[in-house]
Length: 75
Image (cartoon, rainbow, N blue to C red; front, side, top):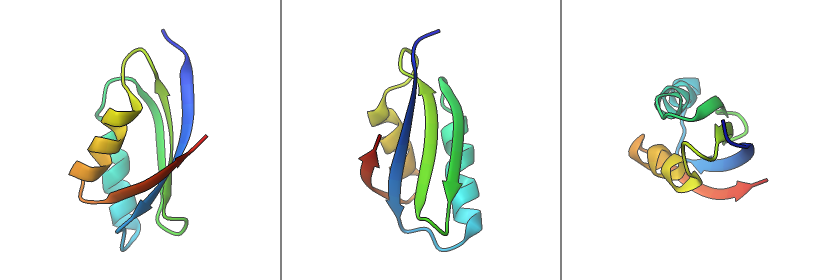
């Protein structure tokens, strides 16, 4: 197992808590994601992942494919 990385990703385009749940489900389908917790109220997702199994760019691309706009990443 590789190093577990924690990132906060700001997201635009969520309209309700169901949007947040969809993002969580899509992220959790990625191999290497340990935890995804998206907040509609905060317009962000907290993600923990194994950097040897998944890259940040793949996480961001998954959010985009879910129909939302990741705007920034915070450590």
